[in-house]
Image (tube, rainbow, N blue to C red; front, side, top):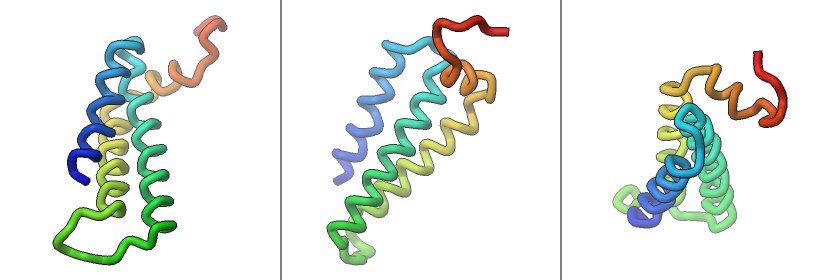
Length: 93
């Protein structure tokens, strides 16, 4: 489970670094991590993961994705997020 969590965090980060402009990486990474957290929470709810404090569950993975997504959102500036959401062909002020 920990390997899957690591791959689902590191692989999108590496892809985003190579494909996006530097100022768009943190907002895109934050949105991606929130989506991954939602999928992990839905999967945990549907599967009905038992509460076992000794093992890492899908709920832990969802919490980890959310925590890292919040950190990426905090470190990114609001104007960077606006650049991510602005139409690419339009003029910018």
